[in-house]
Image (tube, rainbow, N blue to C red):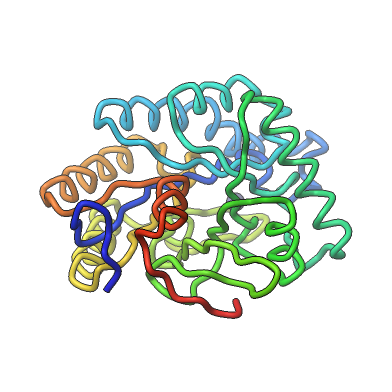
Length: 276
Ligand SMILES: [Zn+2]
């Protein structure tokens, strides 16, 4: 079992993917499909303010992964998140899949999106999550090359681990489909996405059981949410119930990717190394 800081039993990270309009088919971004695009706009206009208010009330620092295009469209929402003290990470430019790009394109997207986010918030951006969690070996190499501190796209463990080999290794903060609100709440007729919209009570039970499991096995409860989904009123109430449930334990280490990286660099975390 990993020894978490302060003798905590398990780690907890709340992460939000600020895909907004880029979550949807980019061909819809010519502006004609207003209804589809408005689902993405809800992320920026409604979801994010509600989430920031909830996090502030519970004094929790979270992680937001943001496609660079969203920072171009709405720099103020991105600055508001950074000013509230939350972590910011890269998440593609137009939320493009890395396996559909050449290595040269992937590297260019990484460089451009990092630069644009850094210019928007005025501080370094060095954490990454691949759009749709599709990451390729060339992206892992480019992340190491460009000095990124972590990725959060792979599913090879439920504790942080290291990927790659020489010349460098990358800290991986693994995700899981079971800890993603997209599978529970996303729905669109065209493009066809999702089937059944689940109730908040069902999702609370699913995630509460994961909290118990991670606590028993000393894992990292890395929850991935999308403000356009979790930001709806009934789901915000459910998320607050979950936060209160976790806060009922005094042995949870609430952390951001930057916190995990800091602990690892200081030698306090002994992490497994895998090729990928
Ligand atoms: Zn995304």
